[in-house]
Image 1: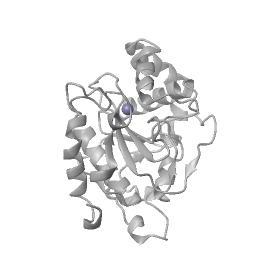
Image 2 (image 1 turned 90 degrees about the horizontal axis):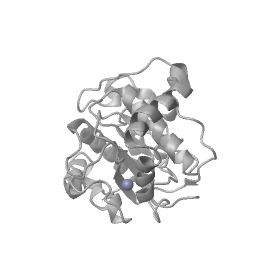
Image 3 (image 1 turned 90 degrees about the vertical axis):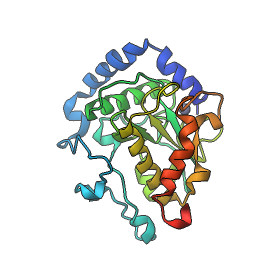
Image 4 (image 1 turned 60 degrees about the vertical axis):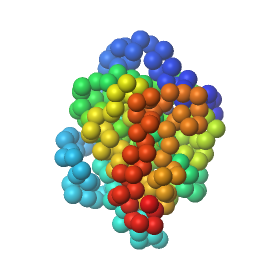
Length: 261
Ligand SMILES: [Zn+2]
């Protein structure tokens, strides 16, 4: 894979076009190409999610794991995640490889984009499409990371097939961390967190996602959750945010069955 590290990816996302063009012109252009109908093909689901609300409380049981081989896994609470077909993703340029085992790490990234005040779902969907476009242009075939969390706390599938793989206890191999893509799930948090922390809604969704991933994969959050900077020469996930990951691990551990804490 023509992959050269997320650090460059961040630079490219900002450097390929002026940041404002990426966030406004680029996104609008991408959205126009898909059209509204192409975004989902079904009525939008909830656009506002009460803090702490979970998919099973919202009639979204169709996204619960179907596997019967692991009752505990099937009982895991699944966050509300918008799959690729629900945000108008393009088809991947090629099929991603699938690792038939769980990953070792959950890597937290920031997108190094503007800290926008638009917390809407439509904004999150535009962001997901823009990221996929940029990553395809990088030659990565599809979105690099597995999950994206917007500033508004909306959670979207990244690389096609990521959620289905998690539900099977497997992992689609992404493109988000040089040297560790085959052992790490990647979560991109929208924004730049060198001097500020993510919004509360984003962080709450991040906790939910990490709990879900730790349950599905039998991971200990204290060992699994890492900032991108632990692996590559990058400031990701931000000078302000990265030092707070011990708190994130604690919060996730507090919501897990005792054997995973
Ligand atoms: Zn990163």
